[in-house]
Amino acid sequence: MRAAAPAPIEWVAPEQAEFFDSVLRFARGLPDDAGDLDRSGGFSRQNWDRCGAFGIHGLPAPEQYGGGGADVVTTMLALEALGYGCKDNGLVFSINAHMWTSVIPVWTFGTEEQRRRWLPGLCSGELIGCHTITEPEAGSDAFGMKASGRRSGEGYVLNGRKTFITNAPVADLLLVFARTEETGIGPFGLSVFLVEAGTKGCLVEAPADKMGLRTSPMSDVVLDDCFVPEAAMLGTPGKGGEIFQTSMRWERACIMASQVGVMRRTMEACVAYARHRRQFGKPIAKYESVADKIANMKIAVEASRGLVLRVGWLMDHGHETSMDAAVAKAFVSEANVRTHLDAVQVHGGYGYMTEFEIERALRDAVGGTIYSGTSEIQRRIIARGLGL
Image 1 (cartoon, helix red, strand yellow):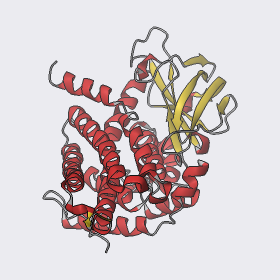
Image 2 (image 1 turned 30 degrees about the vertical axis):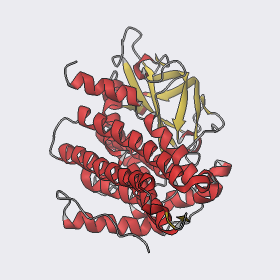
Image 3 (image 1 turned 180 degrees about the vertical axis):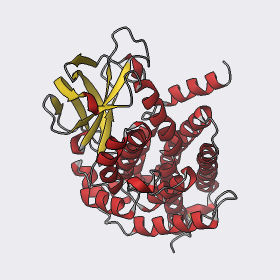
C-alpha cells in the first residue's frame, strides 16, 4: 500500500498542501527510466520538458516573465514533492541548479531587455541555464577565480577555465563569472556575462563521469578569447560577488527541499521492506536494530523538513537567512547520507544491488555534502553568524 502524502505542518496553508499533492501526482506520473539513464550517464530531456510544461522551472519568477509567482515556501514544497515522487535525482538536481543559478539572477539583476529575452524560455524549460564560477584552483574559494574579462572595444574578451559546471553540456545560456578589475580582491571586481551557447571562444568540454547524480550533465567550460558585447553583462561592472551571493542564498535555502522528499521516499521503502522481509521466523521490523534505523530516518525527515521550511518562511518575511540556510544545508545533506547508509543496512545484500535503487540514491546523496558549499563551508558560515 502506498503511503499517504506527508501531512502539512502548521505554517503550510491548505492551498499549499493541495499544490504539494498536485506536484506529487505529476512527479509519480513521469517515466521511470532513471536506472537506465544512471548507467549510461544520460539526461532525460523529455522529463525536463514535462517539468517545464508543468511550471516547475519558473516557480519563483514573476508571472509577467512566464514564471509562477510562487513564494519561497510554496516553491520548496513543490521541490520536496518532486524529489518525493520522481526517482531521477539527477534531473531534480539539474532543475534546482537551473532555477537558482540562472532564473533567479536573470530575474533579480537583469535589464528589462535581458529578462524579456531569456526568462520566458528559462521558466518554460525551453532553454536550459547554468552558471560558471568554480575553477580548478578555486573550488570552495570561489572568489579566488582567475578567469578574466578584459575590456575590448564595445564589449569584453573572456578567458579562463571553469570546472564542475552542472548543466553545461545541455545549456543554452551560460552565466560566466570573470574578474574585470585586476586589482579587485575576493568578491570585488567580479562581473557576470550572459553567454549564449555556441558563442565563438566558449567551448563546453565532454561530459564528466561522476560517482552520483549521473543523470545531471556536468562538464568543464573553456573561455578562449570569447568576445561578448557590453549588453551581455548581467548587472553592472563589479556586481559579480553580489550576484553569486544572491544565487547561493536561494540555492542553499531551497536545494535541500527535494532531498527531504528523497529521504521520505527511502524511509517508506524501508518500512515496506522491513514489514515484508522475514528472518528467523518474524519480520525484520520486529528487531530493534532494524526498527531503530527506520525510526532515525523518520526523525531526520521531520527535522529536515522543519529546518528547510523555516528558512523559506524567513525569506518570505524578509529576514536575513545566511546562517539559517547553512544550518539547514549542513543538517539535511548529512542526514540524507546517513539515511541511505542505513537503508542499505536495512535491505542487507539487496540494498547493495542496483535493482532496489538504494545504492543509487546513496551515491546521489553524497554529492549533497559538497555542492552549494561543502559541509565544512556551511559550518564556517554558521560560526561566523555566531560571532566566532
